[in-house]
Picture 1 (cartoon, rainbow, N blue to C red):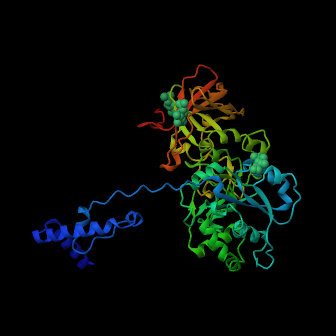
Picture 2 (cartoon, rainbow, N blue to C red):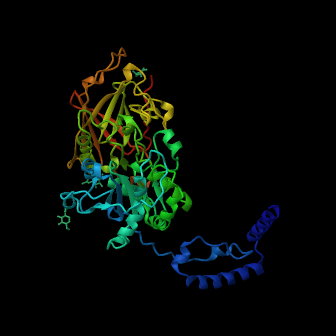
Amino acid sequence: MKQLQKDYSSSDSNNIILSLPKLVFCLLLCLFLSLSLTSFSFKSLSTPSLPPPNNHPSVTTHITLPDPAPQPQPDPTQLRHVVFGIGAAANKWARRKEFIKLWWVPNATRGYVFLDRHVDDPGDPNEHPTLQLKVSEDTSSFGYSYRHGSRSALRMTRIVSEIIRATGSDPGQEEIRWVVMGDDDTVFFPSNLVRVLQKYDHNKMYYIGSNSETHVQNINFAYDMAFGGGGFAISYPLALEIEKMQDSCIQRYTSLYGSDDRIHACLAELGVPLTKEPGFHQFDVHGNLFGLLTAHPVAPLVSLHHLEIVDPIFPYMGRLQALQRLKIPTKLDPESLMQQSICYDSRRNWTISVSWGYAVQIIRGSIPPREMQRPARTFFNWQNRDEPSSFSFNTRPFSKHPCEKPYIYYLFNAMFNNEANVTASEYVMHRMPHPWCWWPIDNPERVHRVQVYKKLTDPHKWDEAPRRDCCRVLQADKKNTVAIDVGECKEGEVMEPLLS
Ligand SMILES: *[C@@H]1O[C@H](CO)[C@@H](O)[C@H](O)[C@H]1NC(C)=O
Ligand SMILES: *[C@@H]1O[C@H](CO)[C@@H](O)[C@H](O)[C@H]1NC(C)=O
Ligand SMILES: *[C@@H]1O[C@H](CO)[C@@H](O)[C@H](O)[C@H]1NC(C)=O
């Protein structure tokens, strides 16, 4: 090692002081090299340059190479490049298909629903012409030894392979870049999914998703496993590899429970790790998602799951009706959906948190961003218990002090304001009892609505380093309304809590 270092340093000093004969030799070499290099293809020029020939590392600095031709921009991934594989059960199909209808865009979304047997569903193929119902192949020859588990895990696992085989004859096959798996109770936000997939090279082998909110689930399965209900994406080259080995692979893991851990086991054999994207949500929780949704990670919202288990996301509504309410903001500005911004009303000493397209909270006093960005525990863990240490992320109590109980405003409507060139979304107070508060601070109860103005998300926002938007309290002319502007933080802008 020492010897090597010494050699390098001696050759370095050679570069600095060039004797005349060396210089002449060097120039000749340069001429020769520049002649021979011009005949190289552009492809080889774009690869990192090799170390120059021994003893003359300086030669490259003398060669003037022609500018490489601009690389043609590969066309970014679109929805038509994604094929969905939804695992479903015939006995639940009539109910669960309503979840799929929420996000499936007829003639734009592609994919298959895999059922355990044929269902008579004559209306739907016309309603959703690009959604095809398929009966899974027979898996009775495969072993399954997990006690109290369901053999349906086998057919769900094989959806990836069956899609590859099914699309082999599809004329649009060469357009497939990603296979995205989900359950029949997964709700996707397709344009955000596409936005996330655009970050990755579909020609490489990727396994993208997220794990569980409850530690024990990650311990029993794996922290580096994509939980199936939250959905996960597999790039086409990886799906091809899986198709080749999956049937023999799953025979080696007959004692596993589900389909997602079988996929994980086979991907471990292929050596492909999980690429974690925080917008996929398994939601292994019970209760109210409010705390999780209002402190969404700074990443596009990709999926929601277990929506038949948790409370409706808007109060006083059915589950489906509540999800339908997200349709308007999702259409207006999907990439802003649930994105949290935090600001302070210095006049009234309030903390304000906006979760765009969903809810606004007004809290008395000043709670710093580091706390507001933690999900408030409005939910329980997968064992239905309120145990802060059971979650695989930081949480906080819903309110620590009676005066700090948030006033909640839920999305009422949203529209695009052509004149101002911004979206205007309106949030209306959710009436609920509040404990008596003795702080000499204005009572937010007087505020009945909150109006939020926001420019459309910059199309490149998520290509860049993630950053939370800023919000600013505007002077409203109406007494019972708070108006807020949400947008990119300006240079030097800080979400500074109020001093006491
Ligand atoms: C889907 O495409 C078919 C054929 O291109 C067309 O007849 C049908 O009206 C389209 N459906 C919707 C909902 O756009
Ligand atoms: C704002 O409220 C907090 C309570 O969270 C209090 O400690 C602080 O003194 C108040 N600040 C002002 C400027 O009134
Ligand atoms: C509206 O705002 C967008 C950015 O949100 C901008 O690109 C566009 O030029 C604006 N249009 C007008 C008419 O000002």
